[in-house]
Image (cartoon, rainbow, N blue to C red; front, side, top):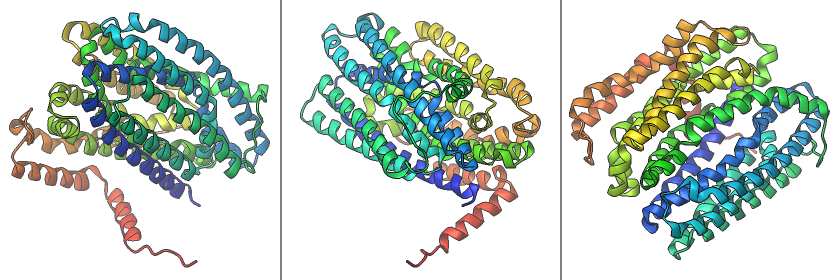
Length: 511
């Protein structure tokens, strides 16, 4: 199977998983906001956010497993894969113990972290946070098995697991909400699904991959650990940096403006729909580039990076523009007018900021795939410093929107540092001209925004239709025309037409 076909299959599998996950995410929040008071919903999203911090102790190992397993499988070195996966599990098991202690500290600190939280909620929040946090810690080391599937570019099982987990947990939460369940009961359901998911990942490895990638409990290989440390240490810096970029947003809002936490969470969740789709489409670049790296040239990898950047920019704009111009009507249909009126501005700023930051997403993936992430870390660190400092300063002066503005400014810093510093440093592995990356990869897809600039004078912020239907139809048509004739190159259009023809004339092979 060709590498391009594997990438397309990976993207398709990830896309299916994300679309189903998004369907769940679309259905669940309306139940939550309608069945919970704003203060209780704010507490729930903070519980989930704090529990997710356990994944910071991943140390980049799951990404490393996907990369190295792909390389070892390509070379037939199954013993190295065995040592790598087993050592990773041992390291993450220790990390899970550390995470459990950290969760205990966070549980004890809840009243100080969120001093504006109603005192009556604190006991329930503590129990709920402990349940979800500990279950997330238990599941942490088992994530290596899904990473092994990713490294071997086998996406079906991870897709099924993610889908069943999200759909099942959402259905259980909805039933509990209809039965007037409280925070503790909701948390216990989530904890149960976390533990069940961990066990299922282990069983999936035994059923499908044991013959190709062996695994032993508590095996620790020094050479594998050293390789993981060298690769994962830099990724850990990236992870911590991204924690300051996006992982602290809700906590900052909850600490300084608890009453706006739920509204900000709704906007953040809507913006994450766009990010999830983009990540699912382009995520398979890491194992694909890792597998072909030894047999290709830095110039070809650079060309692939520019092309992927152009596609990513176009996809970001296609997904983001409706969220910016239709923030209020879309949120109204989703969570009601009360939340929409408070969340629309947050959503618009967050979407613009995430579009800017994610323009560099394909480059980051290629950097990680080629093992040169240590040369591009400065951009992540710079963005994190600007984002958190500006967010804390602005939230105290202009409220929760200041946190969103911190995200926006930090995104520009990230892309700028990548262009000025990271790209020149990674030329040996990813050879490409900066001006070509800027013009063809970053700026060309942004031309799709031009029709939207003409829409702006007709835009009405808090109306269900932000402009007249005829104007909206013209906007969609012109945007599609610009995307096809201007953003995409002639080669892009020919490839798209070829894929479309093969799709239209495809017939299943006989059994």
